Length: 141
Image (tube, rainbow, N blue to C red):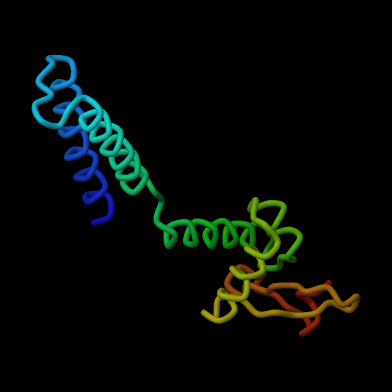
C-alpha cells in the first residue's frame, strides 16, 4: 500500500510540475504571475521527491527478517553456536542491532543464551547443533 501511495503522489506531483512549467514557458501566467507558478512547480517537485522516497523505502519488517535470516545462516554454518562478535562481523550489523535480533530470537524460542567457562555469551541454535552431544557443556567448548 505504501508503494502504491508513493507512486500515486509522484504521478500527481509530476502532473502539477509539468503544468506549471508549461504555463511559465508559454507565458500563460494569468492572474497568478510567474512567481506563483514557479513556487507551485518547486512545491510539487519536493512533494514528488518525498513520494518517491515513500515508494522506494524498504519495509523495516523485511530488513529485520533478512537480518534474522543472515543470523540463522551463520548459526547453521557454525553448527548452532554463535557469539555476539561473530554475528556483528559476519552479518554486518551494529552491535546493538545484533544484540536486539539475538534477544528477539531467544524470545521466539529459536535460540538459547549460554555462558562459556570464560564468561562469553554463546547463542545456541539447537536446530543446527550436531546430533551427538556428550554433555550439557558440549555446545560451549
